[in-house]
Image (cartoon, rainbow, N blue to C red):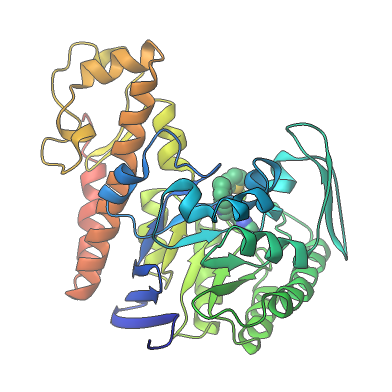
Length: 373
Ligand SMILES: O=c1[nH]cnc2c(CCNCC3CCCCC3)c3[nH]c(NCc4cccs4)nc3cc12
């Protein structure tokens, strides 16, 4: 087989890139949005529904899966693809970010992070090596290094300490990962909102010649413009022929503006989490279906959509389901939102391919501002 992990750049439009990552389990068209599959499920949806929206890759969540059902058990059951019946590529995070946001009694030092499970209080130690081992047990296709992400704003010294630690952990993850044909390990650029620290992080990681690079430490409380400024500092320093993954981003507007600055991959809990709370993303902006104004509205969310959740159900019905806290409501809105994000990405890919990305982005943004939808 040709090289088992290959990123092909197919077109550029300004700094925006059209590409494809070819892996043994399938091809990932970029720019790509990766639905978050937390506990081996994209919440409320079957994998057939997720695939039907056009997703090429989903995220697996190392933190949740190592606690329950356990990485060794998933391995005994044939790995995450078999367990969750998703035969296409899976990217797993290191588990570190969720330790810092979900676990209790967390301690972080040179060795790694130690914490107690938020489920049963059991004690765990996660080193860079153990994180890579767990991701391997999950049979993950793209594995993320263990890193330390600092919330912003933060003091320069604190950002520098976390960035340098993350570089040492990247090297330990690179060694632990070794050479696994058909799989990839991505490094994560840190450095907060400090250009000098972003530059050092990007250049040291670039020298490690990894298969892909994430931009971390953003979408953690800073204004959107600060995030975009850091992309303009970081992306040009990363190898053009490797994929770039902006972690935890974001709204459709964040995605358009980040693609314009050279990002190829995104993940965000927003479409599924917002869906479960009654918020629908549509081509004409966001609709909060908890609002009583929808109670008699027989229109669907988007009669032109290829997603049944957007096309076949009235807003009145969706409003009723959400108010009644019926699980069908959460499912239909999650389905609509994931489909919306995948259609957004397809439109972005088409526009880059035809050299019309700037006007496409302007048209998309203008359609959101249409007011009453
Ligand atoms: O530097 C980072 N290193 C590692 N992970 C990061 C993440 C988590 C990305 N999604 C993981 C998923 C794995 C599977 C389960 C769901 C998460 C981030 N998310 C955000 N913003 C969105 C945010 C979400 C919550 C607080 S900020 N910035 C992030 C920065 C980093």
